[in-house]
Image 1 (cartoon, rainbow, N blue to C red):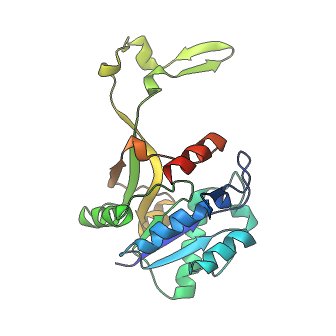
Image 2 (cartoon, one colour):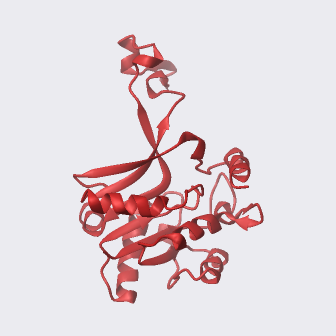
Length: 227
């Protein structure tokens, strides 16, 4: 199996400036994802995707393939990650003169991957012959059933609230993507223009290991957990 690992890291973020290269314990945030990717036994090639010269230099310094810059149309807050992955896949296949079986997306904002976590996920998607795999974390509070919307200055309750499911023990478990790992078959990505196909599987991470850095508070938590 040929597996392409893609690390996307654009430079502009509204909430946290230079998020992907912000310093955490004397290392840029992106370093922790690069390290995890390079430890994988099954990822065939790793390619960096960025519009930033500073990030490109980090890729090159760490011997991550970086053959081209990401175009501006794929580098804004409104850009679709699927479009970025398809663009990166096609360009990399053209340069490397090969076709990959799976694409593994590794986001720098989720740096708490455990040792062998990537390879365990790769083995699972191959063993189950699934179209995609996503790492999940159990959602605790607030439970989705408890969430309230405001429409036309009025409260709109979750439909399950009307069914009087108020006891937490009666509520079903929900899971959120942890951001650690996304894996998809090449044909699923290109044909569906989506990460998900008909047959999908998952890996679970512990809540204590979850962090997805989107703001300054997340950053401070990551600094503690990555010590």
